[in-house]
Image (cartoon, rainbow, N blue to C red; front, side, top):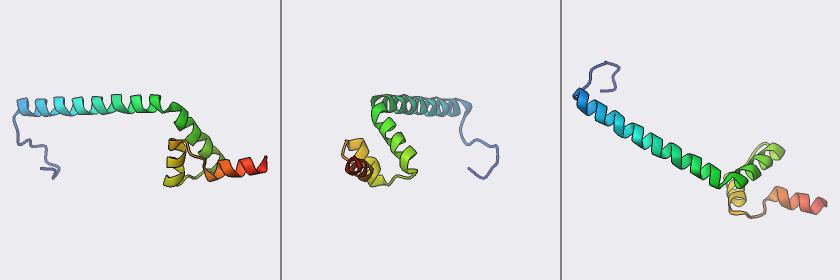
Length: 81
């Protein structure tokens, strides 16, 4: 197993069922990912804009934007105005 040999240790029917289950899992994850991106489009745009301006982002800054908290960059922009 996993040594590069094209030998299966299960029947074709079992292999087909495994493939079917894997496809189902991947399809469900793809659907969930699309839903999350759609639901959070505004936040993703804010994160994109932040990255466009600063080129880097920390996990803390990412979470601040995601939670709707002011980031250091926003604070600096407010101070300049």
